[in-house]
Image 1 (cartoon, helix red, strand yellow):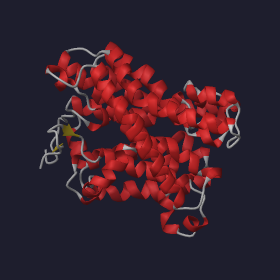
Image 2 (tube, helix red, strand yellow):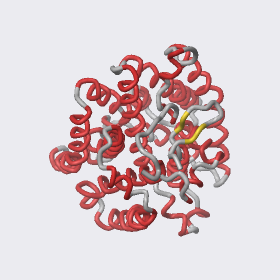
Image 3 (cartoon, rainbow, N blue to C red):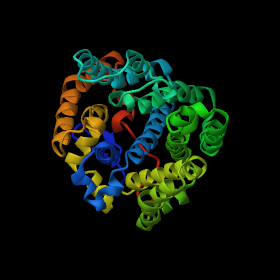
Image 4 (cartoon, rainbow, N blue to C red):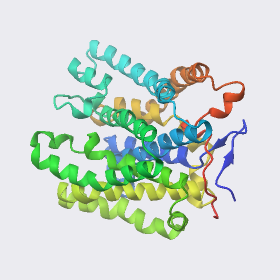
Length: 375
């Protein structure tokens, strides 16, 4: 069975990734929700790890962004960095700044309290490097800042260097990130509170996804990727992500996390991505590809933006907070994301005519992987 599926418009999609997004944002929402009811359900504890959810998002992002760039190079012989940034701007900025506009109004109405310089740091994507930011309602923008900073660097690498060189760059980033974390911890004590937020200390998570995308594009490591489709690998991977990793993190804190833990988590997330994309017919793959779960993945960006308003210190009773998050996310998706995505396609000329084939793998569209689930 092919690892590709067809949607209603006969466009190819990447199986399982929207479902993986859905579970990632669920981890974030449950992890951020303060609820005595949830606290009383110990079997839910492994699924209340917001940091793990964000790490999965990062791996997916590195994978997809690299595929966008490589596919354009394969189709047209070059990468239009300007066009890439235009598409990302239409995709990311409107929902984000709509959220910030609502937050600003609530700040003026004294519903939330934070300094305006924190809002500025969020709006300019420098939250993760600003030591003077504060306020729960904007705290999740550290991950958005890190990803935007990645966008500034990685497309230039794809344009300037060969694919094998980019593969080595991504590999080096994964290997050197633990050194960067440990060095930053000891050399710059003031940054310790931001250790998991900064680009140079957390880039390995995104680069795992980049490495996978380039390796597939170059047809490298086929036996390794094929081996990862065996379901027995889910046992040690899940054991680490849900049991061993959290335990070691609680017991040894940064002594484990900085040199080893974050990178191991990134690699495990990458292995899960390989499994669910290559084996969509598996039990886990079928769950991830259920229509309603895929829809949650489609609106996961808006879910992530708005969950902060109803979790943490702002948590209203569970599951009412989840309902409010869903309502806000659906409104954001249909009123902001969808219209701007249509405008994006018109501006970049990808809706009609010959250039329709230029549609990228953004949001899982236009992807033609170089593997088969039984290769």
